Length: 83
Figure 1 (cartoon, one colour):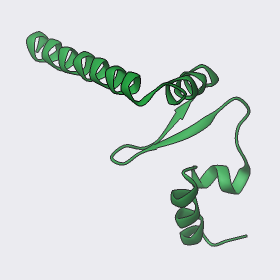
Figure 2 (spheres, one colour; figure 1 turned 30 degrees about the vertical axis):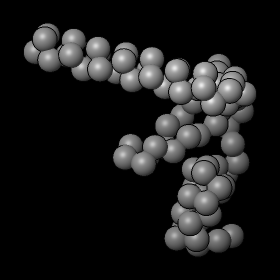
Figure 3 (tube, one colour; figure 1 turned 90 degrees about the vertical axis):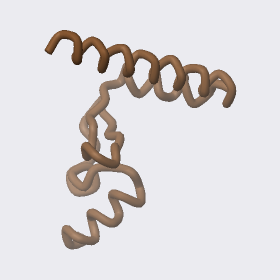
Figure 4 (cartoon, one colour; figure 1 turned 135 degrees about the vertical axis):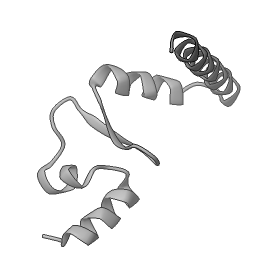
């Protein structure tokens, strides 16, 4: 079994959690890493959505990213107004 520091390097390289390397993947779950927040657990429905997104053309994916950015800006503005 690799040491914890080597598990972390491997998990970063493979883009999986260190726990997944040590114990295996939980059924129906996968992990996605965000640079600032650490690993985010995703269910099967989210994973399928990501797979569908990645199958789209680059132009359509850019449009989707722009729409998500607009939703995030609207949510931030809403939070500011409600505080």
